[in-house]
Amino acid sequence: MKIKVHSIHFDADEKLLTFIQERVDKLVHFYQDILGGEVFLRLEKSKDTSNKVVHIKLDIPGNNLFVKEQRKTFEEAMDLASEAMRQQIQRHKEKLRGV
Image 1 (cartoon, rainbow, N blue to C red):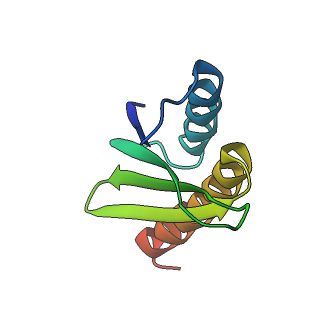
Image 2 (image 1 turned 120 degrees about the vertical axis):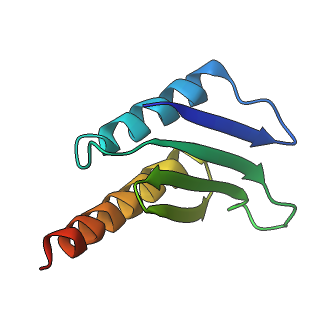
């Protein structure tokens, strides 16, 4: 699946980009009709140590799914965001089946 990663106000290293691609690729196992998506990485200006924000937006037929997580590391935020996205995908599939 084609995914665009946008790191806002910093340059993400290759290790982080690979990690993000692996997490997003796992979502395809749950729903094969994902058309594409975007991941936004942002550092918030706050005194709190949980200042790494990950936004995931997936394009699916007839809809867009969106998740936002904020944690101490981008990896932790990405893990939680991908799990939340998986749950949204499951709910979307249940709606399609009429459950």
